[in-house]
Length: 181
Image (cartoon, rainbow, N blue to C red; front, side):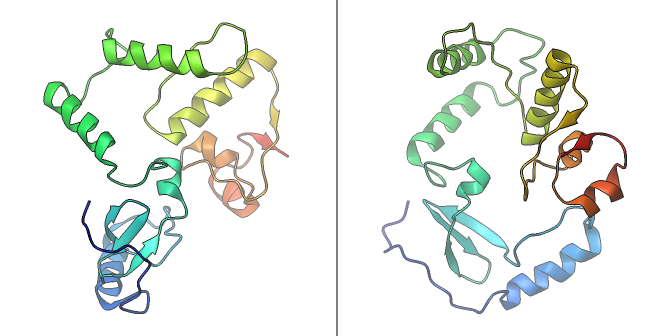
């Protein structure tokens, strides 16, 4: 991480000129089904900060949507990623055994609360996690109706979108798939 002093800084009123230019290009080639919640074009992140194409520095109050709780590009995490990438980047761990996956699963099971036996299912995205959770809930409870938090967003898969509290979005994309309250 750089030695520059850290503080939020706005150099161009958002969205700045480089961001506006990127928005125009993006609009022409990407699906409108993935809404952009903020008029920002993040170029890089460092610690708790997001820096956009126009040089504006924002505090990331989302923690990278909860994937960067230790900050962006934390040195220990970067080292661990580099070390693992030097050995193996992508691996179908669902088809083969992996020492790294087993050790991580053991640690997660060890720190999870409760006295019952624990099983771990690792997934690649929040959508995969939601889909797997719904399968487990349906299998174990046989229930067809689910409670969902007002303002919730769980991702873009059909199952995840069916849990959104946004009635218009749910009706548009999957009428009658799942019943939520």
